Image 1 (cartoon, helix red, strand yellow):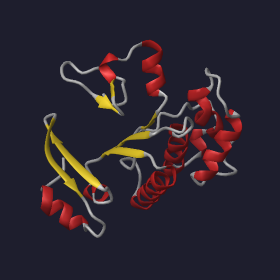
Image 2 (tube, helix red, strand yellow; image 1 turned 60 degrees about the horizontal axis):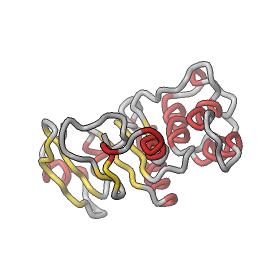
Image 3 (tube, one colour; image 1 turned 135 degrees about the horizontal axis):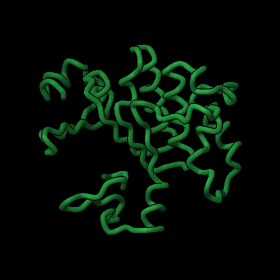
Length: 191
């Protein structure tokens, strides 16, 4: 709902002072362009190159930037310089997730929503993706909301909000130095 893809049945969703349920038409489309989405399953278009997948969200729009140049810069930022012409089938899972992250950043979003971004990756690639997201958050000063069932991923957050049946059951500010075991002990089993 905070990505304005679905509307609430009741209540309000306020983001940056805007009631998202009240947005329609251009206002809704404008808000959605300020949010980047990273999905667990990548959702890359198989017939498009890595570069074309990155710029696909902005192709229908006029932009103040050169789309292909921005796409190349983003691929370089996620460690894929030189892979611009690769099709998704020729990329590893970690590389595909990096393309998906670059695509999510093409509009320079203020907020990045990531749904289990490490869920389909081995531990080495998962760690690299988490380091990448952490670095991008600091460098670009963006909010990242990440959904995960993995305590090791959760332990890397600054704030952990645990939901059960749609209700908040824990809201914990994590300080640096929290160990995974501390997070598990503090909130119990995640899930």
